[in-house]
Length: 254
Image 1 (cartoon, rainbow, N blue to C red):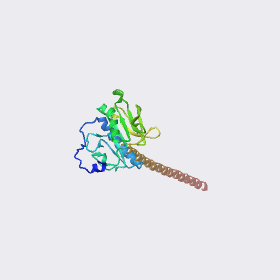
Image 2 (tube, rainbow, N blue to C red; image 1 turned 135 degrees about the vertical axis):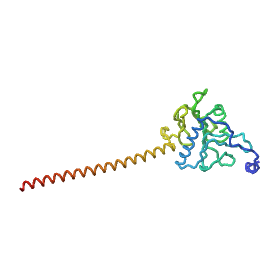
Image 3 (cartoon, helix red, strand yellow; image 1 turned 120 degrees about the horizontal axis):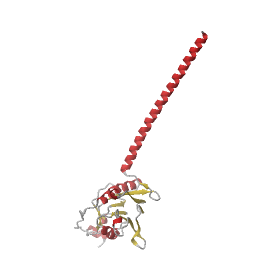
Image 4 (cartoon, rainbow, N blue to C red; image 1 turned 180 degrees about the horizontal axis):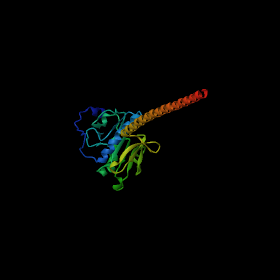
């Protein structure tokens, strides 16, 4: 049966929107910061894309076991304002170009199962981030998986450095902070030395700029007032000298 004919058949399969499995707090905090960062980063570059987090993707019609829920993902060409509960990939022209898995409680799932799942999904680039890599046997902070010609979906990079390059995003991902404060940021520049600002940082900069502008205006008013007072002082001294000269002249005339 062709794909078109199959798509016309009734689908009795139920595709759950959640598996009700809890995630670690660090997973939640990293995703909550990174998702809006990526959305704004792509929007400012003029790219139409949906950036989501923790929704199920199903890629085999009629089989709800074939699924994955990236902690953060990007789908090019999708309306960024939509609110999907899950994705049935046979109903969409393409799947994610980028997916991030944050290693949580089930280490084996993220290290061993994730690559094959995302290969089946057809994702262009998978990044696996392990915030506690030092406490896991053979743990590594960053892994990057991509489809390589003649090699298939393979791991192209693994590093414990603080940053890693993401070809699909056109930037680097960089971890900052330690322990409960550890986060993943979008990093710019040739080496990822510049952090793409968060919404809070932009707001703080705007407040600082307005405060500086207010201070500059107050200083300008103070300088003008000081200049006015100085001019009046000079005029007063000049007038006093003129009066003294006139008084001396009057005495001389007498």
